[in-house]
Image (tube, rainbow, N blue to C red; front, side, top):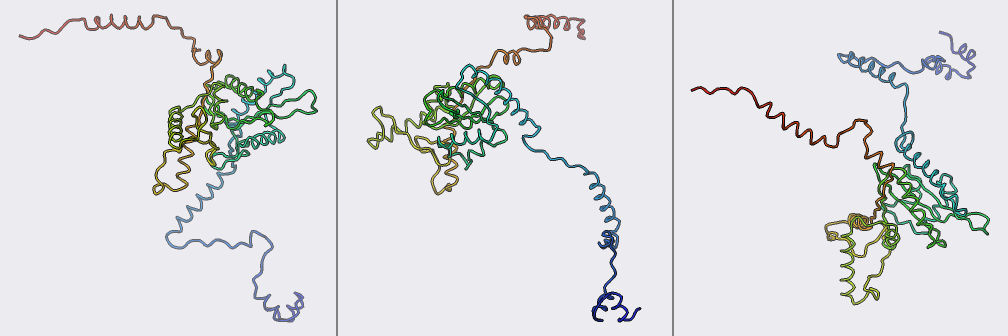
Length: 355
């Protein structure tokens, strides 16, 4: 051992206290791998089990050399479905070329999405079910938004007059999520053109129905586009209840006896003329009662349009391409052949009964 003075001179320390402290500290190597203490081996009979577990853990960690992440809407069925829909929209949008002032395209840019959001907000599409916002509907992985632009001959730039957001459900349903028209461009046929375009898109994609949840004030528009309620019995029940309430109160309707339209519900996205049949307050909480009203309102205001398929779709679905021809009287021939084979099979020497 060196004396304290020599240690101080060698290490550049001032006093002996620091030298003794330095001498008491263990020497550390500059190798980072040697700084970590070696794991202590388990003692006792469980040492073999611990070694086997350590070896299994090392083998498992070596097997995960590459980890892949899978995202919804990226190289899957939803991505291919959206790509097919956008391609079909690009082809069908050429029908608007003879109409110079009109242009329909997919809302792929941020500017088109903002224009669609403006229309949805102007048309008061804010009371969606479950607190869902218009931004979430537009930017959903399964949603596709189309915008219709109109350019006046005297205007410098076109304006967005109609926007529609839809999603495709397998196997044959298009769900129309949002539809709005510019407040100053209503009753000019732009929304009707958009709905008919969606019908043509359904025919091109092989879809047979369009489903929409609407407001009671918009039901007449969809009925003019050949939509119908999926639960008409709820409409009749509400009409009878509203008429009975108006007769009991002595007012509340117009000259024709029809009840006044009510405002849209806060959570259901639509309203009903009569209150839904919910349980008493002591049986259901406020949240459960609100959910029951939302479900009832959704069932009441659900409308559907059945799309007439094209000839190409019917040929691809209804005609077999197996190349095996069948005779028009094949079923009759099989029945006759089976009838003639039964007596032949039953014919033969019968066993003689013993006397």
